[in-house]
Structures are given as structure tokens and as C-alpha cells.
Length: 192
Image (cartoon, rainbow, N blue to C red; front, side, top):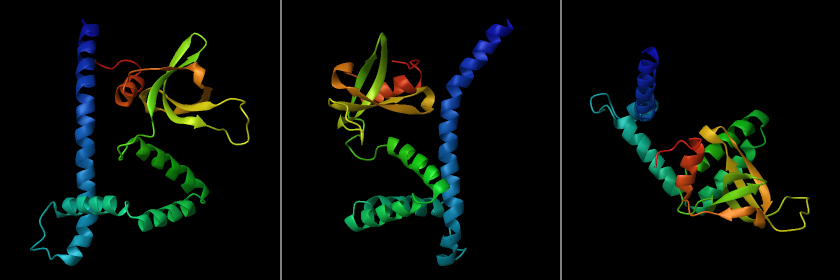
């Protein structure tokens, strides 16, 4: 009887947890934007005219403007220069690189860095991966044949590996990147 109740509670937790975490993240982001940007807004707008939520609206406006500015050549160049400076500081370089790579997973352009989904044959094993470079080279290493760079993510977004394999070790699939990512990130437990 206790085992049955435990399973029911676990099913309820698994159902509510993603919804709850998503709502909490949205709430946290809204509260954070409001608290951070309400201070500077109070410098410009007196307390009588300030309405709750103006900090959130200002935050969304800042994000929109930054998104538009990134398209400008000069801004991209300044950001690239700033990034080079940041990458020279040892601890900051590690943290920044990790956050930058995580942000790149949220693809903002139509073209994905992950070009297609493939199966990498490794003996009797089949590994689901994402082609990141159709023609890849390892600097300083002559492989003697053309290689393909394939990213093999680990389940539950713990990390992953980039492998460089000959094209004949790959099997194409008809999976979309989104479907394959869902399969990999859930350890194959996704719902169809």
C-alpha cells in the first residue's frame, strides 16, 4: 500500500515539477527585472507617477534594444573585443565560456549550429548526435581523411562530447534537432 502511494506521489511530482519550475523561473525573472530596474527608473520618474511593473517593462525594452543593436556591425565588433578581454581573465574566462555556450543552445537565429541529427556507429553501439561541422579539422593533427564533427550530448543536460569521426561511421536520421534533443535530454524517456 505504501509503495502504491509512493508511486502516485512520485507521478504527481513528475507532473507538477516542470510546470512549477517554469512558472517560478518566469516569476523570478520578472521580480528580478522589476527590482533591478525600478531604482534607475525612480531617478527619472517620481514616486507619484511610477507604477509597479514599469521595471519589468523597462527590462523587456532593454532586452529588445540589445537584440536590435547586436545586428549592427559596430556593436558586434565592440562585443567581440570585450569578449576577448573577458577571455583573458582565468576564472572569469571559465564562467563566461560556460554561460556563453549555454546561451548558444537557445538558438536565436534561424540557422542552427547543429546542422543535422545522425547516429554514430561505435562497434555494436549506436550514439545519437548532432553534426556541428560537415568538414572538420583537428588543428595540428592529420587524420588522413575527411572528418565530421559530431556533438554527443549527455542525458539530463549534464554535458557532452564532441567527436571527430569519418563520414562512413555516421548514419543519417529523419529526426528533427528538437526531437532528438528531447530524446537525449530525457534519457530516452520522452513522450511521443
